[in-house]
Length: 298
Image (tube, rainbow, N blue to C red; front, side):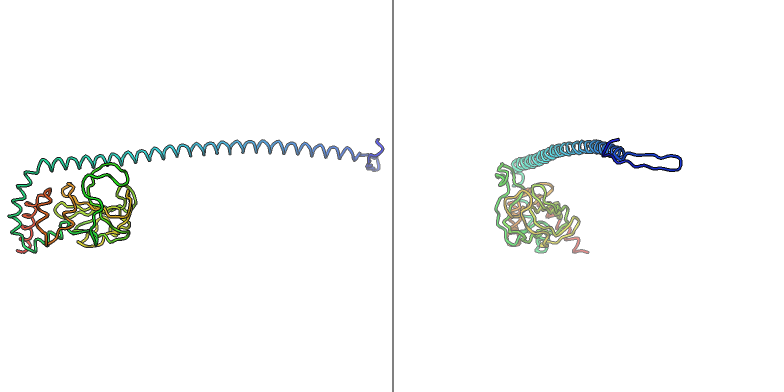
């Protein structure tokens, strides 16, 4: 037995036993070391496994980000292509309209002569009715044209294209009035596309007006509106280089020059029929006269 070792002796009637404390301590220390090594090994394995999973998730996240970026670029490219195709279709349509107008000049000149005779039969009430049901006067308190109808270089794309309407000077939040009685056919409240926020109104006898680059819209599709009613506030939405109102007029899906309609009133009533020959005024006036006559007889 070692000199410094501590011995514990347990005795009973039959016998006695001795235990060396050093051996017990050694066993305890050994088991403690083994348990610690086991815990450390298991912990290292778990941490290594978790670290691998985290790395895999990080790689997957980066892959998803990369795919999302690629898909976003593809979507943007497709949107740009669609807008370009839409612009080309509009331009081709305008070119066809121009060709149609050039081909039909002589025929329309003859119709113009017939219209002068027909106009003499129009009463004041019939003229007022036409000014209320067909787009007339300016949709803004003051009409100042900043970009004319027809071919132009676009102020933002700098490409030559056909301008289907008029650009009218308007500060933000200027009242926009509907120019004839009608029904709201379409409203876009989101700032999207070339014209941004848009209101389209259908009028009697195949006429339609379009109001673009709006800031606020006061109507919704299906609303019945009266001439002079405020339908929106002007703004700078869509593809625009400054606040203004884009104003279009169509008849039977043909684009008309709005400038002749923005100045149309009782004082210059007959000028529209000479300047705007794309509308078949002769048959239209006859239809209106017959309708007014039937109403008067009821």
